[in-house]
Amino acid sequence: MNTKRDIGAEILQSIQDIKLGKGHIKKIETKEDIVDIRKHLHLSQSAFAVLMGVNVRTLQEWEQGRRKPLYLY
Image (cartoon, rainbow, N blue to C red):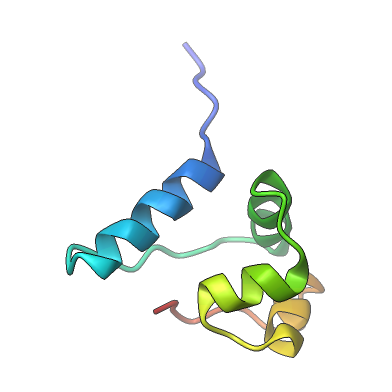
């Protein structure tokens, strides 16, 4: 049985958990993961950057594979 993950829902749940003090760090493996999550949530780069607590340029560098996120707040 191959179940497809809902990455967007996982990220939103993680953000809620972090706000409640129950958060944990989860590694994002590829630049495609970042783009897929943002698009799944129907967010612009600006809105997603705010949600993730980074500036837009940092997000763009993640999405282009020039940098990798070390951790998210």
